[in-house]
Image (cartoon, rainbow, N blue to C red; front, side, top):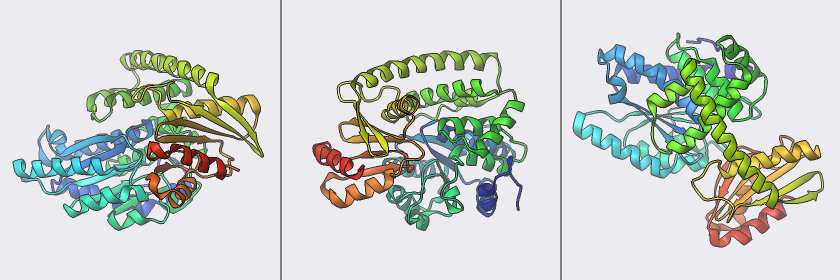
Length: 396
């Protein structure tokens, strides 16, 4: 079963079998009336993936059962705050399953992990839910490394399986899988929004943008929509917000436009204020072949406020790239965490930096990671000086 894709992309074509296997897994779960739960990263790309797939699945559940409320009974979606499927999320999902089994006799769910799930960080949580009989489908675009998570995954869709340099995002994968699951569900603007949010500006994004423009979603509006969704995703934290995000991701109309413009304006003001604060305190070093920017956030921001430390680093990187016309590595430094944003041509990899830290400083309990040039590393705050010194040594 090869249903093709909305765009012409070799990476997607190379994943056709995985898409077919994933579609069969989802359709089987629906036909068997097995719950389908979606866990996705709590950013715009993750929401695009999760909302698109949920929107395709629910009508099929209603059709199968004849129950208009089937989507609420059997299809749960929840964001993850961490950029991996965390053990806390797994514990909550197990609790939900056991409660539903007790109340309704529901079998273990098909768990779909999106924009998370592929990495070594995901293994403890995936292993835990497999003990309870969960089926696991992972739709992710992070580097799986040594593929340690595959042991606990039934079907795995990840463009790194066919191209380590792929610019396909989780939201793009989610939009394509949603169409495989329900052929008339076609929402290219959600893929374009995901590309904007995750800074994926390759040929795939350009094709999705053209399709989105045909739907009435022009580039400038998609930029504002991406910012608005990113802001609201941060505010809702652990809530599903089904109707709200369906509205934000839905068809463009007057109500959506007014809401998006309002949110985007407020979000941009928050970003601009913190950007000016960061510019005033950033420490800039000219190194061989690149600029290193260190942004000390302790005392500048409060945890739990928008924008995130990663976005602050990203703003500083973009500013210095424009001003200096050089490769930039920007670090947002907070108690117990450092967020990296690097130029595309930077000769360093966040995940490799993390691995060295884990080897050299095992007592610091280093976790995290992300993409090669964008990610966050977490550690014991008491080891901060050692961590920063080691990072500085690696960036030479």
